[in-house]
Amino acid sequence: MRPIVHIPKSVLSTPARRVITFDKKLQQLIADMKETLLAAKNPKGVGLAAPQVGAALQLFLTKPSAKDDIRVFINPEIIHMEQEDPKEKKLEHLEGCLSIPNIWGDVKRAPTLTIHYQDEHGAAHEETMTGFLATIIQHETDHINGILFTQRVLEQKNKLYQNAKDDNGKEILEEIVI
Image (cartoon, rainbow, N blue to C red; front, top):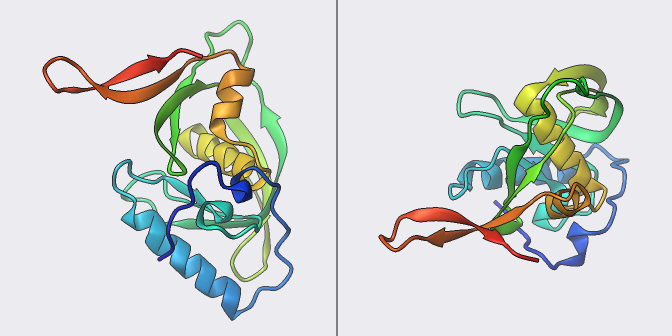
């Protein structure tokens, strides 16, 4: 397991390097990242990028739900994003990040994408993803490109929220006024 790096560490805002060597060192990093992702409880992690554990490599993991296996994406490249029909109501999803604790924001993401990537053994794959997995992949791909979800929230002129407690001590989200 490795500790999660928090903002403002520069590894989170710097584009990561391509993975060239698929060796034991990489396999250990992936194993450590899997442990770290599974250990994230508050909030529960659904994705983890290598920069979030201090490794500036183009590598991330996804685990959309408890029943899903952890998937490994190395040197990912989103080659197509299907945009929503402009006539339909756009859905925004409240996103958070293990590297930015207690902050949430509305982010519009493409509902479908096609990604080219390598697995942990270096084999190349191309897949089309939809729904929540597509959202996670976009969030994690941003991480390896040095972009945090808060930047996307601000670019889209959406709102950021922080965890707070109401008068009865119940947890609520409170808008952050910038």
